[in-house]
Amino acid sequence: IIRNEHIEQDIRSIENLFECHEQERLALAKSANVGSDQDRSLYLSDESISILCQALCNEIQFYKKILHRAINMSEDQLRVSLMELEAKCPHEAIAEECLDVIPDISEKLRDNRGY
Image: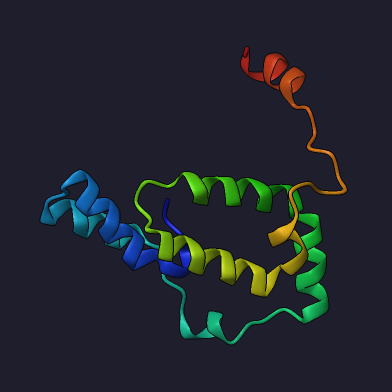
């Protein structure tokens, strides 16, 4: 897994896992999304963050599952990511289910993609 907030550390971990060569590492580094100083000056209000967290509750649940299954993260890295998630979205970070049901898109996949 590559977490945006720990992108450099996670890319290096994956490099080590797959024994990437220098040229491959440079290609990965170039593809990393690096924000500008202007991006850092933008922010969301606490109320907006709370609304987003609630709206993204199901996605947050999947994110937690992905974090737990990541093979390139130590227990400490997992703990840090979960703590960071809890700092931004405390209710969703500890929740196991969300108020909104995950939509069933199986029919849509069959109709549009054939599976």
